[in-house]
Amino acid sequence: MTLARLLRIVVDTNVLVGAMIGTAGRNRQVLRACLEGRVKPVVGEALFLEYEDVLDRKAIFRNSPLTAAERRELFEAFLSVCEWVPVYYRWRPNLRDEGDNHLIELAVAGGASAIVTNNVADFRSSDLRFPEVSVLTPVDFLKELS
Image (cartoon, rainbow, N blue to C red; front, side, top):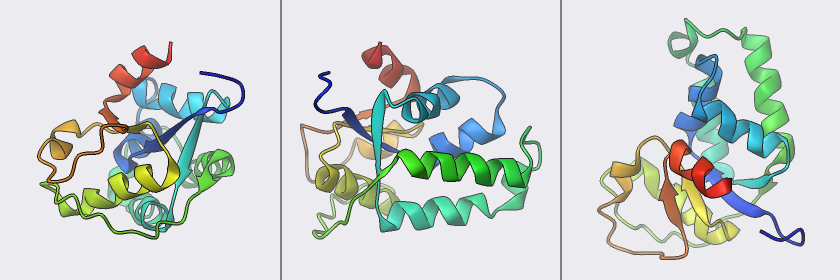
């Protein structure tokens, strides 16, 4: 990784939520790497709306160590280090979970080298392949980052 260009990643919603409902762990370490400027997360309209939708689901955060205000503050801090990427082309890789297609589209549009997710299995059956984009668990991503 050079100083001229940070590693660009897409942080799946399940990683963001995982960082907010746990007190430690790999999800938090991924978020920390973003907040510390070691990687550059990219976000687009579809992912932003998904983040917003899930963060409003109170049942998910029932046992969260963070209050709603603290979760909002963390989310806003995360967004402040993200680069907004417009997605102009809908590639439709036909993933097993249709709701994940936008992540690949964002990664391609944003020049991301990885999608960091806890659901790598959902990305294995793609009709379209983008070899420049890896799909990694937080554990595997952190191994590559170090």
